[in-house]
Image (cartoon, rainbow, N blue to C red; front, side, top):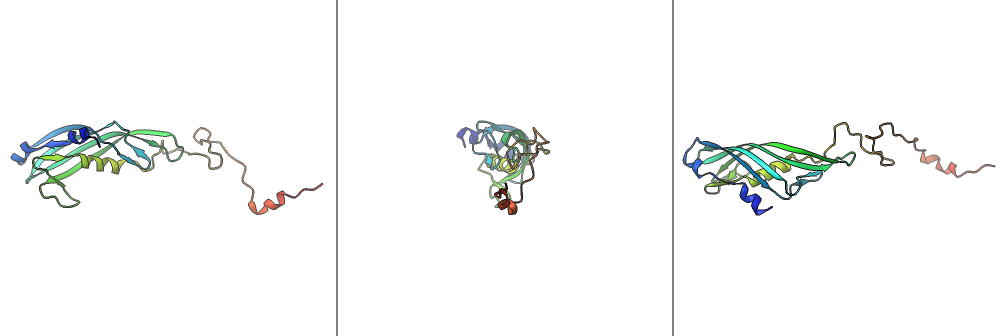
Length: 171
């Protein structure tokens, strides 16, 4: 993770904490390195865009909104490159004494959206992306792309139990 990326997602909220019930909208962009799962990844240098509404509640902050970022991968059936944009929602509560697994820490008068953004993106990246739902994949015998030649076929393989007879020669 870059220092620049982390800094961009640390949001000051002192003004909200002083006025319970108040809210504001934040638009942040940050480059977060290492966002990858087995079949896809956010390209290095591409930003994660966070559009969030921050609202002050009972000595804490509720962040709701959306995250989006481009991703790339390889089709699990035909191995062609796949690219798209990931979009997911954000709902997180920040408080001074967080409940493990339920809320996040409010650091004095700032909240850190980086762990939230990182987790949301990693959970939404496709593990096994497809170029299309109708992708036919590759031939399991020769590797031909079945999307380019849907009529591609091979002779049925011979039964290996009869293979010793192939060695017989008659005059």
